[in-house]
Image: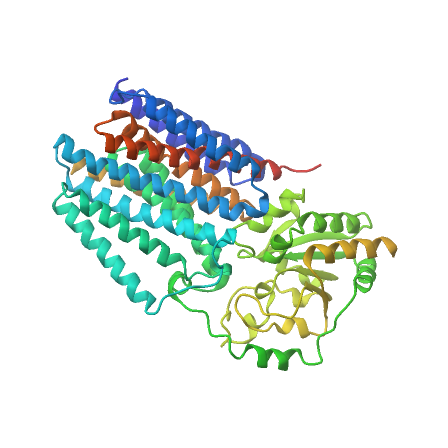
Length: 463
Length: 93
């Protein structure tokens, strides 16, 4: 097939990718958008298969079959609560593929002795570094989310020094490769150093910072694909990679803003030590925390006109999304207006809570983002906080020395009554006490997420 | 050099297009955005197909084969799981 036609087909594929993202700007058009993206991918694959340089299809078919056999069941079977780790895993595979494609290109140089331009070697080094960091970083993120490795922050003594050395080693090996493209050993050395760097970068990231890292790795996988595009002079890869790179960067920025922290602080910073927590916690909570019962909350609901549910990661852990939907239906059948207030960093990835609630058939119009819901709390009778802590902590507004100072929060304390469903008074990820729990208008309902909600539904039926 | 400038031009313009569109995506769809864009980044698959198919040597063919497997998981799994999620976001009447 003439190269012109191939390139025109890649252009069409790129347009389909752009339209695919455009489709995602509204839930109504999103399904169609995703199908367009898939169609663009199919077109790019078919055109590539007709390339004259391909001499044998055996390995290609084997690879496509094995990859599909692995990917399809994962995509179909994963429960919505396990979505963050699945996305991390898929992301890693994309980065890994970039490393291998660049590796094959390096190996070819010696074989065909055509010599590479500097553009190509620089791109190969970039693919190798970014791809390997993406692959190993994503695998560590997967392991943390899946519970294979501790979700807590883990770091070595002088962690940043090691990272710096590994980064320098990557760059030095990259320089060697650019100077002497036949030195394939330098490429694999570079991949090894970047792999270690990928592990080292994600190990210190604790659970609640996961949304930032997942977004960043998403961006990296795009950059790795674009770098591979520069290696192969392939516009479809460059465009698709750039789109994904931009998408990941935007999400990363949104997540960082939602925590009022810089990206460097998330990646390299250490959260303020939590030593004073217990003492300060006792001061704040002493004698002021009011525990309540499902029956009491049901009575509150009975007279309420407007209820807002604020979900956090605890909702995902307890898999309480269906129970919450049932509770909302019970309230709505009594004429109560129920909406959901969702903080951008609630959960372990951007949009995590939205997917969980959509899975439980909650209509997307009821899922309100932070700015929208904050203006309504003053007119809200009852706020039900389930499994969220730091994102509703008023210390973010009042205590400039707190580790979450300046973080935009859901201002649930402005509602008439706040019911916090939680197992204990234990602090959230930031390790600080939450004065909300001791506020005059707050009632604590000590219960496990799902069981607690089911008890509420039962109590509501009796009133 | 000229081809490099063209490639960089395309790269930079695509980033701008990406920024313009993606800033308009509502937070509700951020997870599908991640998995969908993730599937798109699996377009490395076309590079992998070339490595696996040209078979300059056993090593490049092997690297190509693994790359095809990895990228296929990324692409097929990514689009499928995105589809599954997006179907849930349809308006319930």
